[in-house]
Image 1 (cartoon, rainbow, N blue to C red):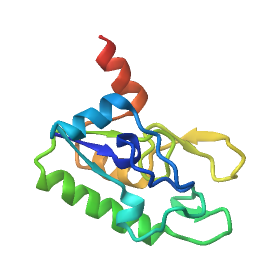
Image 2 (cartoon, one colour):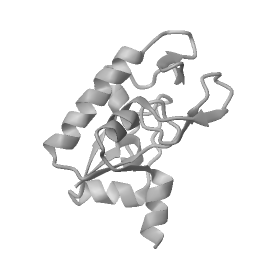
Image 3 (cartoon, rainbow, N blue to C red):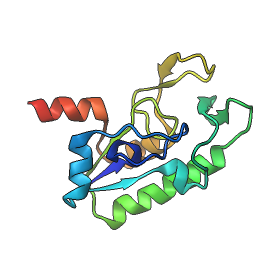
Image 4 (cartoon, rainbow, N blue to C red):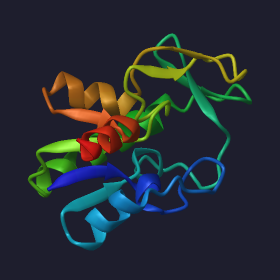
Amino acid sequence: MILVSKCLAGVPCRMDGQSKGIEEIRKLVEEGKAVAACPEVLGGLPTPRDPGELVNGRVITCNGQDVTEEYVRGAEKALAIYREHHCTMAVLKSRSPSCGIGLVHNGLFDGGMTEGNGIFAQKLIAEGIPCMDEHAYLQLLKK
């Protein structure tokens, strides 16, 4: 069992009210091989919502609101789902302030990127849990 970002499973839970569904990931959930979670929604944020980016370890929206508490709460709830379902890895949405692995938006709301991990991804990494973004997962499937 793996945990996947809910937006990758086709659920419209992103900040813009859309999904980034990937057929291979959606099928995993349908077949009971994956469980989907959105840390941002689990933390109490609405859909749609103001975009947030990491700024000095905090998640700040484009309107200057600090929503770090919601992101941390959602990451903890998503980790609980991971454990409850005995998952062995996670496939997360790239560039997200929750789920980004290796690269996240730079905090300037200009589309730029910077090295780093999202709040949930960092929690998984700190726990030693294997995780990758959707691009790495799709490359793995091609091998």
